[in-house]
Image 1 (cartoon, rainbow, N blue to C red):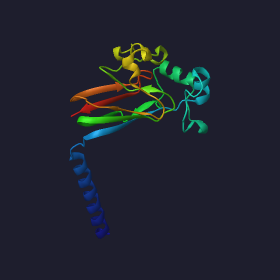
Image 2 (cartoon, one colour):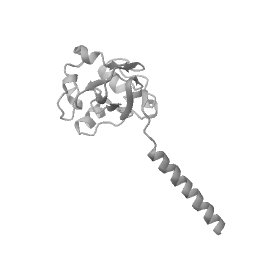
Image 3 (cartoon, rainbow, N blue to C red):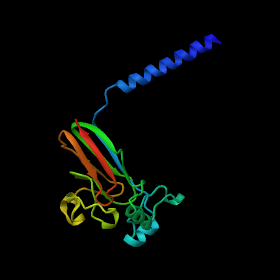
Image 4 (cartoon, helix red, strand yellow):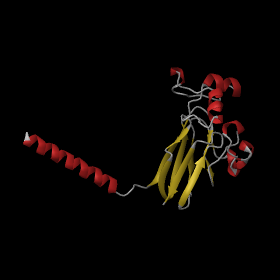
Length: 183
């Protein structure tokens, strides 16, 4: 029995040492990072309201895991936006001179717009009372917003970020946010 207790104590000590070593290790900062825009729009309700093929390529929709257009607006208005609409990861670090590769793996268009402070987007009903941030004013009629659009299945790259903290959000679905620290 004492032999087993000694083995168990040794295993616990090794695991503890490994955990402490990993926790104390310097954070990895890469020169590039991948960010994914996600959503699960319901093709039936979105396309009926917004036009054919507005919402497409939604992997989980056939299984019933899609959000209707009405639910998207209702949840946003209640201040509980759909967590299925998201940028992943929410925070990351890159080295100065690095590149952000942003891909839209969702079913509908998004923007990846740098903003000074997070806030509302250009679709009033999705803002939950937040004011539209200056960088999103005008929606797609603004060239500055339009050039940050990413459509389903496409990718954009962001380069030339200076050292410091940078905030990005979707000007359509303003709860989709990423904070990037450039070191």
